[in-house]
Image 1 (cartoon, rainbow, N blue to C red):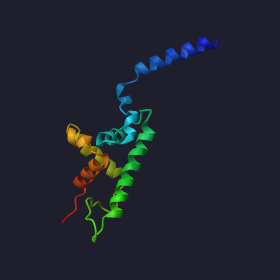
Image 2 (cartoon, rainbow, N blue to C red):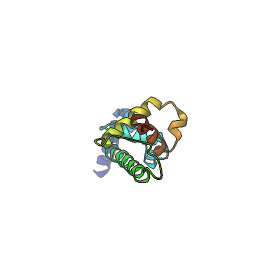
Image 3 (cartoon, rainbow, N blue to C red):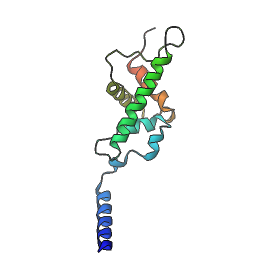
Image 4 (tube, helix red, strand yellow):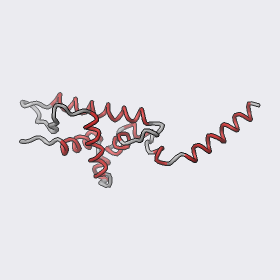
Length: 133
């Protein structure tokens, strides 16, 4: 009896996997390594129906929050000029949207997409929130 349940479950699982749209698998485990701007982009635009949505969603937000906190912490008038000058009410969601928009527009730029994700993020946020000199 156990063999039959196992076989039925396996067949059902294979059928469901075959019926699942490929876009559901857009996030690869390697994206979580965050080695490139494309990795960050993949995590930040994952759809809610993706099985990796929650970890990808929070990894994206945490990366943005950490990078912006670091930027804010090391940039001041006396040492390092600010690269990103966002309004006070700007949220992580705003930053995520700005990055996703920038990355979508630059996804065919292999040089940008292969850069470290923090560089792509700063490019995106400084384009959206430039600093006046």
